[in-house]
Length: 224
Image: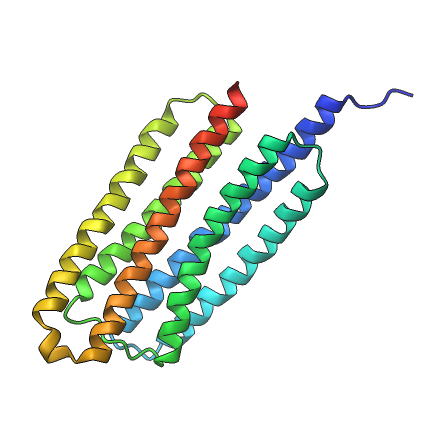
């Protein structure tokens, strides 16, 4: 009887995890898409806001289930220690994206969807749209780098991701300036809530950038 080699077992386990990573990122993208929709409804004072928030929780639960599968495969699979550590680190950063979205969704739910976006409605919607774009680019880069390492396409994708993240930082500063200018009219609670919204969106973008940096380091190590 011919038994599979260690290298073939290693490759099959790694392939399984890569597929799960892409599935996880697909779910995370849907989490952020649902969050963007919830924020759009909130800014428009829509009655659909709380329903949209529930979709964030739904997709986050699905992403969390995939994350558990990844953790289980990494715990028992035939992986080199460095590879396992890098994969855990990558999954951890990706999970931070979902955590940030969930925290913002909880805040919206606690306030019963009544966090009025004005005077930074435009900044909230633009930055959340960019956060969704960064996550989409992270997923694209992951597919390129892990499915076909060495493709030059990944450099362009990652450049776009970093540009989107930088734009989120700029928009946050714009929002801060507006909030400070109108702090007297807003009142402390309204000021704090709007600041939390913009901060959480930036946190999602930052977590995405951290995941991208880990992805690059991980794929470079795989080529050595």
